[in-house]
Length: 484
Ligand code: NAP
Image 1 (tube, protein in one colour):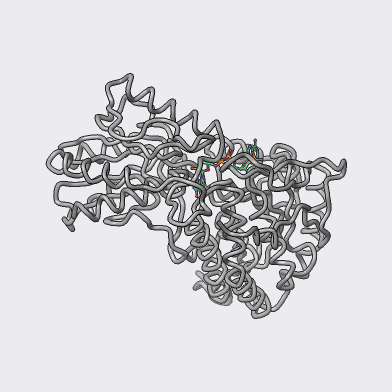
Image 2 (cartoon, protein in one colour):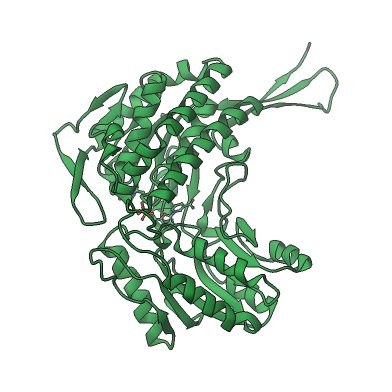
């Protein structure tokens, strides 16, 4: 167990226009450690008025920041990267204490956040326009890129640091200013970004962070014509509300929403690699990631051998406080999340599924849940269509490639999917046939800064990472120069 160094970047105030302030009425919200429910501090219960001031500050800061020399903006990002890595252990502990994931995963999250910052510092230098051949002589057609303006950011609790990194880094690289609202369960990692940005020298008002009522904060963002873009990571249900809410002021939207990832193992797969991939994809973050394997489809010929190894690996997972050495699965975020997984287990067993290991609350109590494998899963069970968001691995059996693709696509979601096969032709057919924004072939862990992360269908709009991740924070203008 570490010694509480996490308080270094724990800010119990909001950052608005360069000042650290409480809520107008003085209201606060307790922040708890999901390991035991103990209160680790409070944050302001902000609302419309505080958000309106943050938007005004971001709007006032925008022209100056947008016009900052490109290399100055890049230098700030480099400093931000270094500040993150210099404080990786402290920031990771803060993340683990408020969210529950194992410390090693939290350190990884801080590191990938830093990588996003560095990536977008590089991409900012390639935000090129173009000169397009005109149809008539005497005209010149220039296409240019411009920072979109004030960006409202709303992020979830499951990756409280890196989900903001993927928004903050491209926004700042492009020259946008920001009002961010972290999830109420995990506000400190978001506020820590505010503290780091202030520390490395971002001017007052460029980065603002407000905590409190989601409806009020989001409502103020929606109403404000100055907010030109909303970027959201969270559930599809809330994402739809935000798309509707953005209509009146015609904001650009980026939506990173829910997933229901199929993980397909073919007979020709490398069995050990497939089991290893399934473990990391399923049980990372206690199964609480949008790209977690939600449905594991295994071809008949390899099914029993795969299940045997998956069960052994699942039984070996060490569950506990994420700050304890060697822990691989922490608590779930709250009681509702546990009940949801219990509901999936009850539904599956009622419909003929078998719990091979786990299946109930863990002896550690609280919100700990046993790593679980259910076999005999069918398309009639709830997890075939709904996101589990917990440490439950349902295994389905299939016979043909066409059957696997059809079952994999039978969902409104289209975020990540995975397949294990050594057949190259099949890998190409899967890329063409699977309706997903991201496909891992022989890999269960595919998030990387160089690639465009994002979903299709009801999993979202827009991309984070890659060159596309910067594009989402830029407006395209065209100028026609005639008569010269
Ligand atoms: P959530 O309930 O949608 O919350 C996400 C954020 O939205 C939080 O900051 C929350 O604030 C806020 N929010 C809640 N209700 C709102 C409303 N009516 N209007 C505006 N904002 C509102 O999602 P979650 O439970 O935190 O996160 C899990 C979901 O996120 C899963 O579906 C997962 O798949 C998805 N996710 C997607 C990605 C991706 O990249 N596609 C990545 C990670 C997670 P409060 O905390 O104050 O309620």
